[in-house]
Every structure is written in structure tokens, then in C-alpha cells.
Amino acid sequence: MRHPLGQGNQVSTARVRPSRSLICLLLVASLASCAAPEGAPPSAEADRALADTLKGLIAAAYDFSTPGVAERMGALYPDTGRIVFASGGQVGTSPDSLRAGIADFWRNAGQNMRDAKWVWGDVYVERLNPTAALLAGSWSIPHIAPTGNPHTIRGAWTALFRFREGRWMIVSEHLSSPPD
Image (cartoon, rainbow, N blue to C red):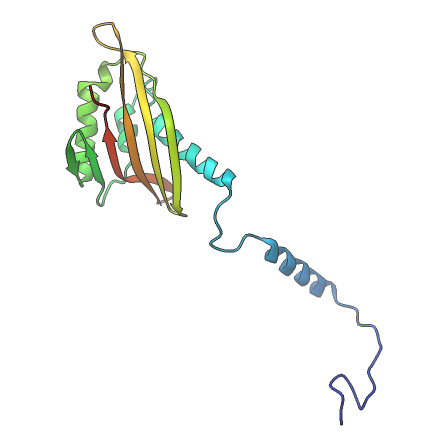
């Protein structure tokens, strides 16, 4: 009967030296096995970075100290496709009607605010998957009204972001104001 490792019952004791390429292959394979498995939840650091990114996008759009505020607000959303939004008791799905609402806000209120500053209150961000996240937060914009008096508008914003075309965009949102 033959032994599986050699002729008869004899087993070779010769030392086998692995090649350099085999050692490299084994090293790469062992390092890869230490990596986070595909589909593993992102780290707390990655979630904080995502929250900072989404909050920063909105704060930058609402930077009243530089020209182009209304255009930056509109750039938070995709140019085409359906955008579901609710604000001021109205609901819509058209990018054009959303941008018309932004233009109305800018014309009736935004351009008349002096020394306006975007301020976040509590903000919560939940990563839904690698390309979707939900942001819910309170905000305020303290400013000087046209009357010369200090004034603050405030509200809550819930936004569903999708990562498309290399950037995060709002595809659904709800804005609400506190009761008077």
C-alpha cells in the first residue's frame, strides 16, 4: 500500500523553502483577512465624518456672507428627477417647484437679512447604507431685520441625502417651523 506522502511507508524529510512570491502572497492574504468584511458597519469615526460633511454642505449653502446664496441652496438638490419635499404646509416633487420656493424665500426674506448666520442646534445623522443618509436637525438664522431690529428664524429640517454623481444631494426633505 502506498502512503499518501511518498513511496511506500517512507516520508521525505527534506526541508521545503517557500519562494519569495509565495511568502508575499501569504502575507497579502493574511492582511486581507484582517480587513473589515464587506458590508461591515462603518466606524464611529466614519459616521462622524459623514455627519460633519452633510451639516457642512447645508451650512456652506446658507453662508450669507458670500454672494450666490440662492444658487448654493439650489445646488443641494439634483437637477433632474423627483425630489419629494414638504414645507409651509405644501408638498411637491418637482426640482423646478423646489427651486421656485428657494427663489421666493430669497426674494422675500433671505436678501433682506443683514448679518445673517446659519446656526445648527441638535443634529442627528443616520447612515442608511453606503449611498444614503438621513439628517434631522434644528437650525436658526439670527439676523438684523429690515426694521433694524434683531430677529431670528428657526425650524427643524429632515433631509434624505443620496450620494450621486460624486456628491451628496438631498432627494427628500421636510422643513418645519415652531409654532408662534
